[in-house]
Length: 291
Image (tube, rainbow, N blue to C red; front, side, top):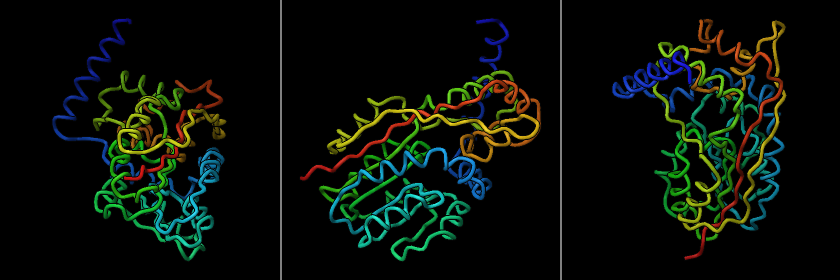
């Protein structure tokens, strides 16, 4: 490691420690604000690249009798609408912290058994009565919260035999983007204005341990990648598109990449030759064990 990078790491660690001690964290409200701003373009910029994974997991759900379903981090409502169609006798509640995303979902929902609620998913689960839910679904969302706690509360609120199904990004997802992000933090630590502690799981073992430990039998587990072709504007820049996808939601504001500055220009330069992103994820279906 060269001296310049080492100095940059020291400055970054000092900056992060100072922000943490003054309680300036990348919070759920910041994630919500980012998704509010990109909600109108999310489906065309990002969801279309990953929706086949979401639909594939939904197609695996075969529970015969389902009456109450929670869709955590429902975003613009694709999974909520499919769940409502697949289980017409069930009431589906789509929960998301972003009012902008929910506004889009509500504009497209024609299902009478779907309703949407603006709330933090973990806080919502904490207030839900024990054994009052038949199914919990979540696609691409629990990593923005605390996956271990989400799984534990899901076990508490699901009825015996209930289903927990989710898709979550691994911590090493989009290495092209977050590698550039880390290099930008090292080079421009003074631009960092929030301490960060993302909750994306490190590996498959983390998820399997929590599922089994919380009383779930794992019916399905898949560890995979989905490739996503990069989109650039007329000037050949990737950042304007990334800011529309949600891939940098919250992180953009933590480093002020959502505006023109030396850091955002450096970040852009790190990705000049990137043509494809690699989204690393896990999908799982767990059935709550009978008492």
